[in-house]
Image: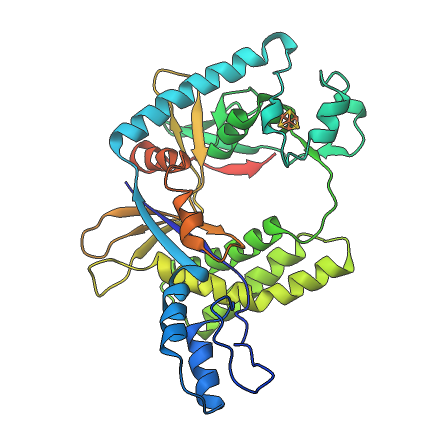
Length: 357
Ligand code: SF4
């Protein structure tokens, strides 16, 4: 299964620096683009530095958007399913008879639960924790059965797991217990941060691919749709300080540009003059782990098809603040989520319906 990670950085490129002498800086550390540099040279009637021009040309390939095409081999997919079954069983064992799974003190760096775990090591007083609020309820997922359907047991640990749930489990069983078995969330200061940035850009990518799937080319109307989706996603955060609210307003332009670049990368059909056909956008799928009572659920950002070979490809959008997106992308090469997406596409099914409980 072909997996395509697209990493984007939603930042406004800076214009090239002008030195006190009135000349354009040729420093290579500038966060600009080759196009802006060439335009500035032309506008200011200055010669283009071949060295900086070549450097920016190379830098542009990984500083704003980067595409990583990788594969989930059948063996990897099969093994991931077997491991998911084991994890499902381990989750049930860990919480049997009201047990609370252990902490993993090696996973605490940057974990939002650290204050709670330090002060209530046994999690015996969950209800009284200050600053803990109910998390997002699980979405009801119904499996088709004959002409009808039935709801999967989302209240039972290990019965339905997502790639992000498995990641939480492997990071720290206590973290998984708090967030997925107890459905709790730490109430943090709601400020502008990577999560807001990522959600906003995702909304733009989703809106653009939905329009492409519906047959609309990525023209001005789609640009407007992307901008609207981005504004709506930004609003949904209800950020609670002026600085964060301004940051999200400033993000809109770069987020639109970033989404458009990422959509463009998603539609690249290697070896063809055409572009990928968008089949699904954010469609949930489920697949049962073999010989187990564990279902895996996931929502790939998109599934696209090569116009000539017909080969399917899972597209995942990620955002990062790094200026070296190639390095960020390499970190996803061994991401086990890709193996689950492979299983969801090759052996999974679309649920009958779903609704948030
Ligand atoms: S939930 Fe786990 S990782 Fe997080 S602070 Fe507690 S022990 Fe550490």
